[in-house]
Length: 356
Image 1: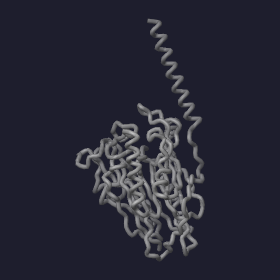
Image 2 (image 1 turned 30 degrees about the horizontal axis):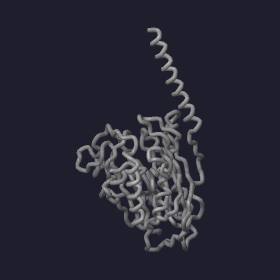
Image 3 (image 1 turned 90 degrees about the horizontal axis):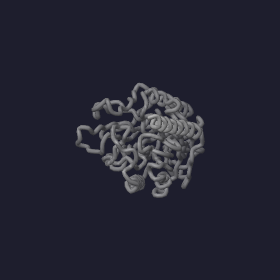
Image 4 (image 1 turned 135 degrees about the horizontal axis):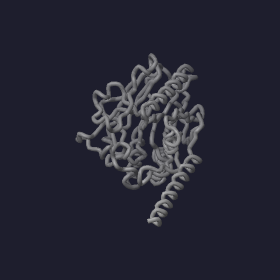
């Protein structure tokens, strides 16, 4: 009996030592971005933005959370009530990558905001998805990481190494290097060690015939917090947007807000509050003259509690992807492109604007 007790004690000590060692390693290697950093950028062309104020030629902008090419219609996800941790196969990842690239190629967008783009993650076979999209479309890009961790130790099997972030793709000439702006992190040590470090990716485009700029802000706000993180990040976002507008610039922010837009819950009500529930974007949060641009004719996101079945009573839809525009930007149209979540758990949302 004593021998068994000693073996059990030794095993517990080994487990404890391994846990402490892992925690120490994650602490030492934790991604600690500065408040502001120059974004990783690859320029392929520098086309002029020939849409001066008063021009009737629209600027076309896309926002799409691509789900790291791993959250297609056949996927679920453990954080949403499903069971899957990683994509079904690397063949599935490649299929989704090809489909996203084909969509970007067939549409002539001036600016593309992409979220959840892996560049070297275990879950997607260490594929550099952004370089793939750039190579397939001929679009340049800027990139800001928001999920960089040497090893995510949960669940089982674990997620492993992650290198993922948000990317803005365009061939428009830029007035200066794009920047990554850190957003407030709602998580404390040690939870934050293997969690996302949310950010904004800000790109400035000079406008032909104007001394002002089009300021394009790509975002992906907090998902799995108690709500305070989303609020703090939204407040930080609005402060930056207003500062840019006060300079006379034209401001567009777009991406995955992880918050439902006004009126969308009337169309896509929450079915099970016990599963993941997004926050709510309050219309009153915007200063006078600012606008929210979104479309409730089709859902922009689905819950990953099960593989996608549009006819299932357990299928949950949301509208959490959209845009914020400054008072000097006219929204001509906004549309969610219903792709039936074939290659991502989000549908792309396209916006057409003119400058006033």
